[in-house]
Amino acid sequence: MTLTEWSPEDKDFWETKGRRIAQRNLWISIPNLLLAFAVWMVWSVVVVNLPNLGFKYSANQLFWLAALPALSGATLRIFYSFIVPIFGGRRWTTISTASLLLPCIWIGFAVQNPETPYLVMLILALLCGFGGGNFSSSMANISFFFPKSQKGTALGLNAGLGNLGVSTVQFVVPLVITASVFGGLGGEPLTWTKGDVTKQMWLQNAGFIWVPFIIASAIAAWFGMNDIASAKSSFKDQAVIFKRKHNWLMCWLYLGTFGSFIGFSAGFPLLTKTQFPDVNPTQYAFLGPLVGALIRPVGGWLSDKLGGARVTFWNFIAMIAAVFGVMAFLPHAGQGGSFAGFLLMFMVLFVTTGIGNGSTFRMIPVIFMTERQRAAAGQGEAAQEQAIKDANKEAAAVLGFSGAIGAYGGFFIPKSFGTSIELTGSATAALIGFVAFYVSCIVVTWWWYSRKGAEAPC
Image 1 (cartoon, rainbow, N blue to C red):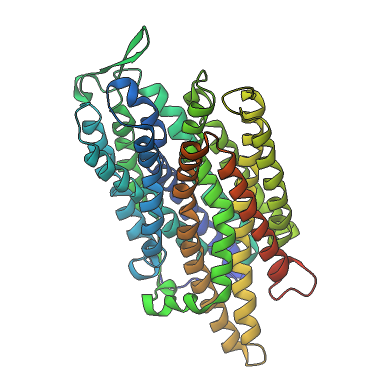
Image 2 (image 1 turned 120 degrees about the horizontal axis):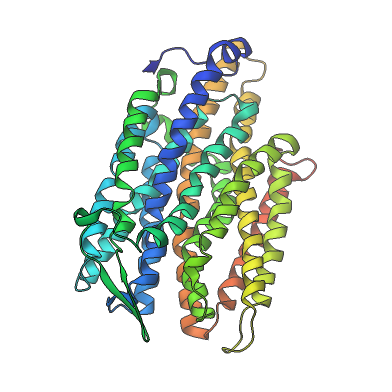
């Protein structure tokens, strides 16, 4: 299961042996990552139903439940970023996927009782961060398997199809909680009440439904994936990225792309519920994450063809335009507004976050490969080979670490919406703040990466 020889930049090795192994690891990685995203985002659907089932939580408490998985997931990603070279990709994928069983099973029992203490719900929201942490280790692992020329597409597929877990949970959970999927084993339903309307709801299925799939995916990872001997590295060796300026710059850009994707995914259902009370947000919540995830591989592919910096630069401009579109269709002082326009502009926003996710992750391996090869120029073939190995290790760590920083957007965006609505009665102030941040991302991309004579063109 451990690959003692791995040279994806060697064309003969890649064509005769490497491609097949890399593809197998990629296609096993994707469902494991999809389930991780599903567990990470399960609270974005669960919280919408809690008040109608008798759970007496305030709107601010509900926003906290929606936001906390992103906070814990982002923090765990910092550690998960460096763990694959220490434990091995196969072993860690299995362990990290199996860890998702804890929050899923516990949620299944906790939501069956409206008297469950809010503190328990907070703990469960934090435990769902296990799913968020998995992204960094998964992306770092897959980056080792592919040559530089194909990293954008491979990472885009892993992340993009993995991100489908967000839309999957927001599509599947509203369906499975309406039926006794597990019969007597799944427990009794609660009564959902809104005005004169009542119905039976098995909210516990929001957790239980993922259990068999998690077990199957963990087994597939154990028996089907590989560790790479040459990718082994200590934390001390990887920690060199904290001295690399481009690590911090790419963290900033990824906060703008992935942070927006995961933040809008977590906050969109509750934002819809507060701004358009007559609309059922669960009917539309899955659409944005779906289009954002599906377009992400396209962002990687476009960046392989056109250059990641160019795609990222224009994509942030499009994101700003989409945010202004969202503001134009919001109700003001409870009056006016258009849900159709609001939804359309959010779909455009999700598309741009997906493209930006792919383009920024394409930039990272190119930046670090260029830097290390530039530093080794004129020092002989051995130095160039070592530069490639060092670049791959650094890029893998940066992919994971930037994913960690980016994930904090999943906390700040829902909380920004909640705070903005609480203080001003509208989400406009939060959206203006997002625009200002995207402007800073445009400046960073142009100055260091996309302009003529940029320090690290990519």
